[in-house]
Image (tube, rainbow, N blue to C red; front, top):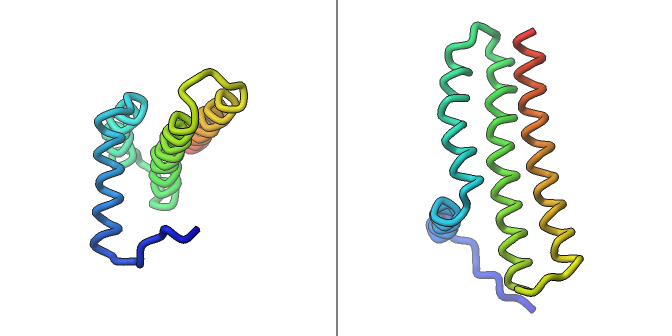
Length: 116
């Protein structure tokens, strides 16, 4: 099955922005993390540390948002497949949530290591 459209920069950007718009409308976790990112970025700018440390904090913070987007995609696919309770569906969603949790832990550990 080949239902992939040909690559087109502007169309693909439109698809990406459409996905972001959907997540902003429907995913409260992403909205909270994006709101926190505003303060995290301000903290990164204000903290007195090397540019490489600032980059580590920025990348680990953006990683949280990326993993949350992937988790939201997983949840949407699972919901598409079944609306009823299914152990494997729950497991898939739980694993996605675990990925987000580890990304957040990584980000917090980076902050702790840089501040100490």
